Length: 232
Ligand SMILES: Nc1ncnc2c1ncn2[C@@H]1O[C@H](COP(=O)(O)OP(=O)(O)OP(=O)(O)O)[C@@H](O)[C@H]1O
Ligand SMILES: [Mg+2]
Image (cartoon, rainbow, N blue to C red):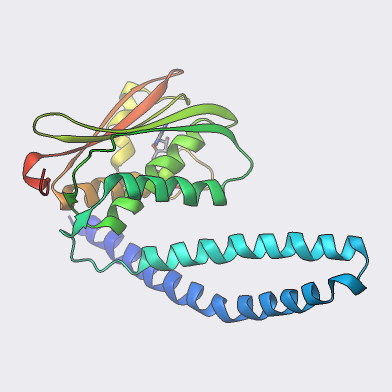
């Protein structure tokens, strides 16, 4: 579909822009860090309230640097796919990134990860992008309070990854439209998150499914088939 191609180009362009922007941010941030370290050396000579300000600025700076490193990693995706992927590790990384960037939420994230999960054939960066999108949607669906549960498990032939939220849910008549490009009911949404997820999951050869009940919550799940499992 030509529309899909446009979205793909836009996303690739966005990826490149993000990579160069975050790269450019590194140097001024290092300069700020060095200045803070200098102030830290003068700790004994400075009043307590200044030292407190220096500490909280350093802490905020660490968070920014951590985020930037993650975004850089993320946009360095080699695009080759089919490398081996540790689903649990990617999941934990996504939760870590979200915990750092989302601070004003009372949403609890529970993880129930099967430790014996084998590796699967897929690109870790693409899976991270998918999980970040689904996790962001789940948090947004919970608005102020809620619980999100992420689970990994396997049966004889498949590996399952799922995310359930206790958010607003999705009406039956809207379920088919949520994967359309630019479909959104959020003021600041692009409506690209799920269409990108669907494309990436299809490229991996996996399946993305959804179950939802308005007022109760939603579950998005990814199924990896047996031919994607490595040394399983
Ligand atoms: N977990 C969820 N619970 C309830 N509704 C959801 C959930 N995930 C997605 N949706 C619905 O699907 C729509 C499309 O989601 P999608 O991620 O594609 O775009 P968005 O979240 O609106 O915007 P963006 O991802 O660009 O911020 C959302 O606007 C929302 O209506
Ligand atoms: Mg979204």
